Length: 425
Image 1 (tube, rainbow, N blue to C red):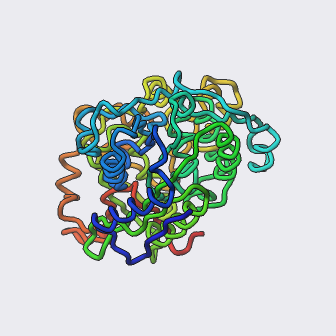
Image 2: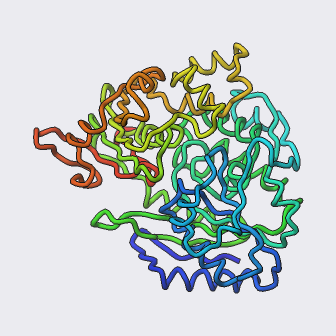
């Protein structure tokens, strides 16, 4: 079964969304399930409408919802305030925390030869198919995976199999999938449905589904209207891959913007309620890198920045090695440094480099001082001066002209799109 609704100009309001959720549960036969596990995103997908959908599922299914496991991956656990913000109608007692270092089970291994083939020999290792133990041992007879399809630097398009394999996966699986994507090149992967990482996830999901309860996918596509307001453009649900393919096709049309010329100065705003680390904030770099002009500058307004990594171990590695080119980072991995045992950190450091193409300037407050920002390879600007020069509440999404006559490109939330210059593939 597949429930599909949406289009580039569709508007899905709360009433329509409620009807779609009802239709999904009915066609999926969810009333027969007695122990349901919901796997939604964390606060980094606040605008996905997954919170509203999860609340609807809890209301409709009642005590048949056994647990809610946010797909944290390597992110920090959600706070009580974040749960209240994103899931206001879902009791805190339902939520479980995913521990990516200790709380996983291995279901199978994808052989090394498969990864060598899909990567054109760029990597030579096998891959563990891992999920949180709750998916296996919780006694559930239905898993509902809820999330947003959006261009993604590792998987090409976020969600579907990634929500389980990375969102509830373990260290080795996350390390190896992220490094695969990094060495294959973000430009080759971002905004695509067919790429090495997605082929790995499809293969791993086929292995995992032999051990898991049925997985019902509910996927959203979020865009902006003519006034720049966030709106839901698509809703796709089903048990197979078709819902992902339909959602990804719509996301490519809605979330990828091709610009008439490369950007000389870009300004990205990181909402402090969502972005506390460069691990997340570097989406501004990932999503704009194909639109930036050679020698351009990217100014990232990050008033809530407190740290580099979401995990203390990864934070230490970022501080130690800094953001470097793909070539330099692969050399460090090959040399047998500690990055060889922390490939997701190595991948992140590759992703955060502009490869010398453009300048990255982080504008931060006192919790992330200038010396810390510069120590990892970025330039720094005082957040007060930056906000005064580029007031985010006065800028329109897209092209703006400052009082001084400078043309800038403003992105109010880099997680919600992908930008390319028209002369780039």
